[in-house]
Structures are given as C-alpha cells and as structure tokens.
Image 1 (cartoon, one colour):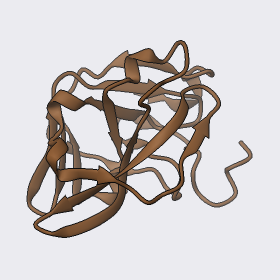
Image 2: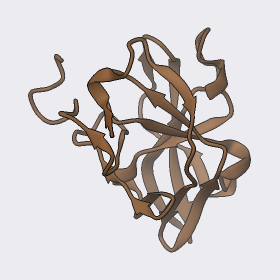
Image 3: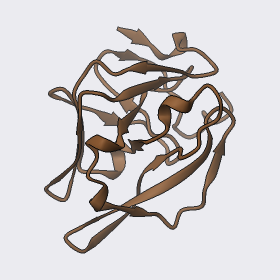
Length: 154
C-alpha cells in the first residue's frame, strides 16, 4: 500500500513498474512498459508515457489554454481525433520542462477520466476527482486525495 501523504513535495519522478494502456473510441492511444510516475504529496500518481509508445497520429493540439506548473514548467494540452471525432483535452505534455524534470520531455500524461479506459497492468484505474488534476487511483493507494471540491487549498 502507498499513502499519497507520504509522497514528496516537490514531486519525484520514478519508473512505473506496470504496463500502461490508454483506450479511447475503440482505439489504443498508448501502450507502454516504459512509463514514468510523478509522485506529489496528496495526489494520486500521474503517469507519463513516452511519445514512442503513444499513437501520435491520433493526437492534436487542444484549444485549452496553457498552464504553468511551479515545478514542471509550461504544459501543452492535447486533444484526440479518432475516426473524425474530436475529443478535447485528453492529455498534456511538457515540451520544455523545468530543470529537475527533464525526464518528462517527450512524454504524454492522460486524464483517466477523459478517455474510455486507463489501465495499469490488468487494473482499470479510477480518475482523480476534479477537473484540474490527472491522477491515477489504484487499489493500492491510500488517500485522502486532493481534487474534490474544497481540497484545492491543501
């Protein structure tokens, strides 16, 4: 079991030891055994998948505004286009991450709640509540988790 309140701040980047899959509209958007986990106090892990393991031809620039993370830098948001259908803001990346987070360059993080399914091995993950964060909740995590209404100030 992992307690998210034991995760560090600033966040740490560690290898993901599980296979990661993302599905949307009957397509596999990503499938990787080389993903990274970002661990930050009070947050479920965020999973970053190498671009080499992502079907980039299904991704497009999102019309979402860019944001700034005090640790990782400027985020670029991504939409998906599958069979002519556009799915807005399914993920994000850090094209030029801040010092200390260079490992995230050429990786994509997906919001588990904005795709049809996100998997770690054979476990379908649950999305972190709230519209801002993209954490992946699994059976081995202990919260409470930041994200629901009233937790932004944590």
